[in-house]
Length: 208
Image (cartoon, rainbow, N blue to C red):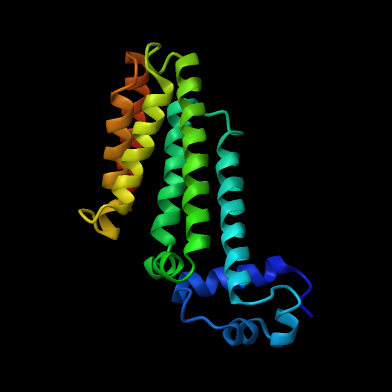
């Protein structure tokens, strides 16, 4: 007997990642879990509710993973690479059909995903800029609010821009170029040294 919503959402995440959202019915979810639909409905009222809980679970998962990056003692540039690397992996692992289905058939849940991601990424970028200035890695005279909005806008435009294919905007090449473009414009000489080291590490790991 399944008595934990987390177990259900773990299976749902697996199914949605593999097949998208639209094609997965409540019958499919119950069958994959080895439970009756009646048991499934003890946890959710309908598919819309299930999708909403899936979205909330994804938001919480990403928040937990990103928060881990703040506990490792990284400097601002290392931290930036770690968080951006995690988000890049999330996009690589995600089935495009999942986001498409969410956007088309569950726009209210999709909008929550987008707005929450935007708010949190803006907050992370702002914190990173302040930290980098304190560490002497970023220019003291940079405007944190303007730069945070510019970087967020640039990152979102890459994600939603039809000029880039899914393969291109999730590639390590574009990932490195985007971070280098951002950091070179705000870094001190000390920061550039750290950046060059991180780019070399990225290139080495990519070529393995």
